[in-house]
Length: 177
Image (cartoon, rainbow, N blue to C red; front, top):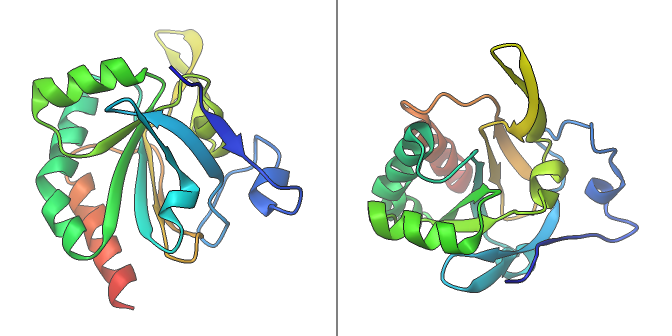
């Protein structure tokens, strides 16, 4: 399985940002090429001039991550109708993504960010704490990317209930304007 890469250019503002810089609306979306479900790859170049949603989640087949993927899958026809792709990103490999998709009949694409390159570029690979123990993990976050390749909206520390609907509303507003 191919490992992911963060595609950069010396003139790319996103590539020049320190890893601890928090991306905000208006910033260029970091370029990428990563393995995805179905034994394929997806690159930001393939999404050029298209709006898309990148939602970062910690792990396939956990309760919150499953609910989020099901919610986005349920709304996928509405996202498709406005020309916006939905792409989930986690450190799980593409084989786990395939099993996750099949088990829950998901319709969204899932990227395998095993090296955490994209999660790091977006600032979602962070230090977390549980029961006093610190560890590194994915902060559930979502980014709406406009057709211009810039971040249109950011949701950090996402709570799953109602989130997919909020992202759809923002995407509809972006595409209407």
